Amino acid sequence: MITDKTSYKEHVAADLMAYGLKKVGLYNYLWMDMLRFQLRLRKIEYYHNVLRANPFARIWLFFMQIVNHRLGMKLGFTIPKNVFGPGLCIVHVGPIIVSPKAKVGCNCRIHPCTCIGANYGAPTLGDNVYVGPGAKLYGNITIGNNVAIGANAVVNCSFGDNVTIGGIPAKILSETPSTEQGLFPPELIPPK
Image 1: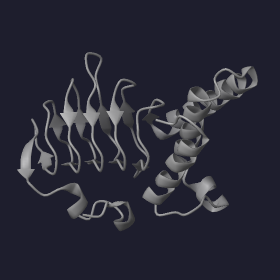
Image 2: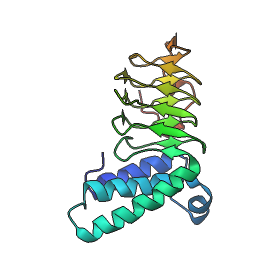
Image 3: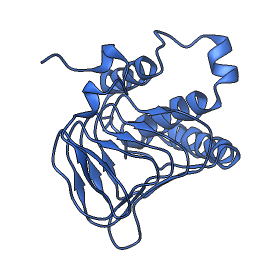
């Protein structure tokens, strides 16, 4: 969670690294709508968590939330603030629905047509989690670190670290961690 200016910069740098970028160029900002949405989401988190007491910051926060909500509706994203850790990568434009009660760790790669959470409980995902297209995660469950969730998986129970899961309902397909499957850029993978 963003708690100060330094953590805000760390989140943004990790997010850019997840996209394979070192800085935001004009081309990237104008043509990568999901990156623009994500950078504004991080700024909203910073204003909400750090500058909330400033009345001018609250006005600017309100304006940014409206603009980002409109962009999110265009892209199909329903992603609330303070859910994802640093290193989030939204791979494609398309419907992504995340519960405000969900918690996701560092370096999450998420594909379209994904739903994380439900009204009665929200999942907690660890670090280096890959969420394939069409995956549905719901309930009060915990997904460990270095987990790859296959396409169209329906995950309604908890899983530990370093596994690949898939199916309806989800089950362990292999004991291979997501970091060894080539799902993340090499610079995001922690050293052994």
